Length: 283
Image (cartoon, rainbow, N blue to C red; front, top):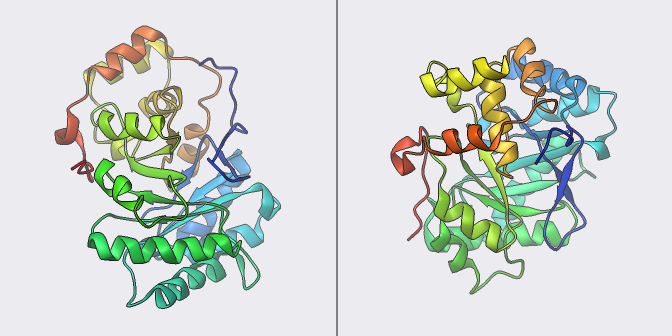
């Protein structure tokens, strides 16, 4: 993959007409008073993909940014997530609808809705997926997927899912935790892989190997990590509320990491031990 790809590039989502931008903007823990400003800055910098969640408690702020921005709603890809089901498919569906309304108003939609975690058990995951399918069939979301799901969780869905495979699996991905088993499985089944924590929350900013590659390209370490994710074919979701960094994190389309650079970064993998949030369970 060469520097000829650009911030406007998208990937098709399987069995839908939706396309997902190659670079996303994360708003995890973005405080409500800052989130609107950060989203507006991101849209101004060229991002066309914002990733929020019920758990982040800032869906309404993302919605406000969408309404305030001069970028038309249909040009912005918005993702949100649900963490746990309610007592029934109907009640869970109502929770989903509440998010759609916060983000896009009563007649609105989201572009992607994910199950945030595999932690609600077999029955809970089934409930969540059936509610998401209802939302999808009604056009209130353009695509549906999962987050933090391993191979076993996705395979289990085959027995009841009307929509399979899920369109997306969002997992923690960076050189220190490459989660190769689930990534390979997703790629084989046409599931788009999104990378959260692609810059490892800056915990690795002083890693000598990373610093060497950054110096070689005269780039900040964050840009090296985002470019790495893009060249792996993942959809990275860097998060920052610093306006300069928001802009800098999108400035990754005018240089290439060489095959050698990629090999060196690949060699940093520590498997599950390298995860800072969660490595999936593939059983």
